Image (cartoon, rainbow, N blue to C red):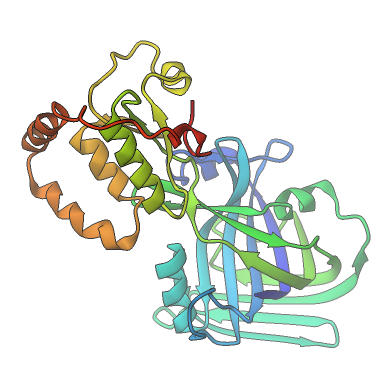
Length: 334
């Protein structure tokens, strides 16, 4: 994939304004005490998904509004909105990456170092964006604020009340200054004057699929042969490496739950807390491949009944030997 002809229009905003709009688990990142929102129009080329037929256009326009955050002390980007002028890409990105793309009419032109971009809502014509800029010289040493906004290779998505992370890989940016520019947009409700504005010719990019921003841990009875074999099967099914596993007798469990009574039930832990028994199994289903999603129908069964069935089975779980190789797998924590 290629990102081309980008403008970075970076607006300073009070951190508390941004923080109140972020999902739970995200913290606004600041530079010299201020948060930043960026409006970034660009051209995307050669967008494709590995293993899928080419159903997307070779070239389309995009304009995103982003801010800068940390999750578990990892810096990244959070998109408030993403607009594109290609319906297949809008639908594909919403399905594959859970990004909140919208379809818009767009126009872009670059003539003799004059940059022109416009965007109009197809349903609400009054919601418009018009950008006009004259490109200047190459920037040899990007300042610290520009580095703060662009030296990030992760983005975060809030999906089904969980935080996920995507990663992008690319070479270092190159930038041009802008001699002068005009901005008229409904995308920013605050100042229409950016703290800084730069142009980038673009670069090649590779992007990965979403993974949990904070990988959940499944705790199991390490002394139980049946439990250990079930966990080994879970690791094999979880081909995307979404989950960590750890025995309740180990250091990881004790460091997180020093004052918690050890349960006979399987336990699930993520950034929202922990659950056990049938509730833990239902949480695990969210991270398994799509063909396991049908098991979510058991959500209609009362939790008390599910736990009673679970406990009945758990009483007879010590009937097979514990696999010797389990602790050698890198996703099994101590």
